[in-house]
Image 1 (cartoon, helix red, strand yellow):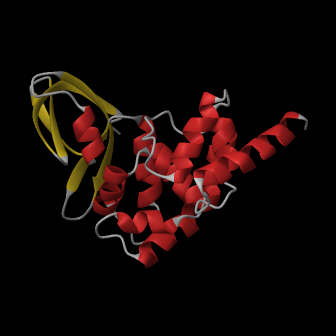
Image 2 (tube, one colour):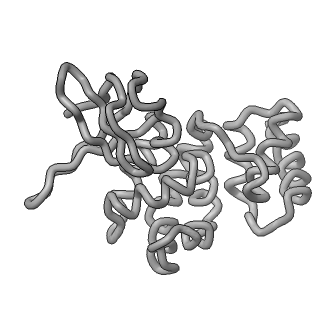
Length: 200
């Protein structure tokens, strides 16, 4: 199993990065977020990898963060969701946004990704919700950059962190709330719950 590859970027496009290591170019299929995070051609890069072997194809997938690779593995475990669909979702979602959407049961977020219908989105949430919610509450969200302002959950997360709460504390509470609520209501309810948790 190849855990990661470190070398110079010899070629890149939106969903593909070729890393040259010891004279061999490894073509890694990536999300658009990883492709954007990797440096320019000629610069050194590190990608965490996952290899899939099928009858007609052996493919290597690369990720800029271990947390993104973990999301890829979780998505691939869902029936009917393959590597291509997984990369499409991860092109639209950072690992923290992915975890929040699944833990909150907000399947409609995934239908915004091209090629992901309502049934597939519901299956993703149904099959991963318990697993993701437990990891969010016990360990916090993956350490990945958060896009503030991309949704009410993200706005609430950012505001509560400014108030001094950790990402893990906030994620565990937000995962239990209705994501359709306004950011101000999410913040209010979170503060109430966080206050109760302090005295447990």
